[in-house]
Image (cartoon, rainbow over all chains, first blue to last red; front, side, top):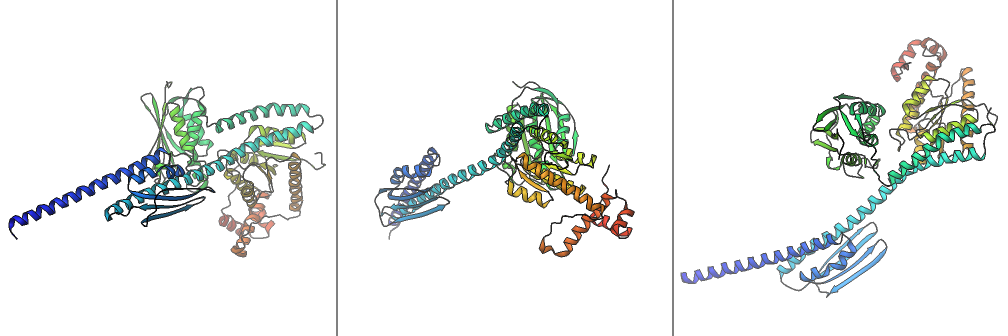
Length: 356
Length: 208
């Protein structure tokens, strides 16, 4: 073999390697593009599994699959779909959870190993999307039922009180105690307005309406002292300044912030929280910082303001979310500082002057 | 006299819903009961400590600041039972009935009524409660006391005995206005034994 021939072989091998690599890269890029198309389609369909199954075939077909066959049981109703042709090279999956089950088969064309490799890779991505859609649906269904159940408990409490009041009033009116009409009338005069207020409060809660009332200047230290006393909490409170905010809003924010500490104090009376609250003035803002010196670091700081998330599942999980929203709607901010080795610190900024 | 002929007495209503509290209070006053009102655990305990004649209470379990769970109401029952285990607590609540009733009865509630309750049922429950108060008072005059003990069978007799001891000692100390000498005499034990029980059960005289 001459040197010239060797060079020729080397050039041929190098050229072939380059060509194969370029072709494989092209294939990979094409498959990656198909994956992105599937993801985009899924997003455009709001992660709806039946719609995604119905509309995914053009992308899969373009990616080189020869056929698809699926059967979905969607909360008791079965739907199915078939496209393309069936081959001997099949990729099958079965998903099942709660009231959803899916059997799906994807058929590859009888082509080279590299196409089968890319097809398998795309099929795995596709199956992952299907699985994700299934769990998104189940998650939202479970969450909705759970929240509905919680809300029912909360509303039932108020409704039962109202029903008890009206029931008592009705019994009094239908079977009055002789000679006690004046006392009954007096009781009704006091009870009925309270009943109306209760019903209005319930309606506001149902509408998730935020109480934006007339704003007034309030001493934040005095307000906090009263709230701490109501929650039977002890705190080292320093500083003071006036804030411009409606009292119901301030109540909502402060009660939601102190509520968790109060629950802790009730559940662990031997180790109540040692709250340190400082109030300082900033430019047109009051900064109220709340920290429990004996608190443990929070393992899930990202969950703190997430609505409907509750550590023990007991509460509605909207306390801190509501506090943050109310602060924002009143021109303030509620932030939390979380460190792996320190207790949480809440920073509440409230406007000192009229918020425009 | 109440319409049913039994003797009405003094009672405490613990309810945070102002309208309901007012209507309930009025309905009972019209039937001869002397009513004191409280809207929280704190004000209820203050009322009980101020007025030793209050032996019967109507308690809502959902009290502030935790109005949508039973924690405050159950804590109030525990507090009242520690102050005076002869008190009769009628729970009138809108909380989840099964679990709330179990918790309340375990802590020594006398009766449990779910909202909305008929006034007639409430009056009947009150009559029973006052009847028990009167009969137990008569028993006390004869040197007897009635104890309620929650016993977990697996804990054995020792736990039951200790629970009974503690309740009996607390009751007698309260009856004798914390007089150790009189309590020892009433229980037929030495004064040293009373001091031993005080230490063992962590019993302290309630601050006036």
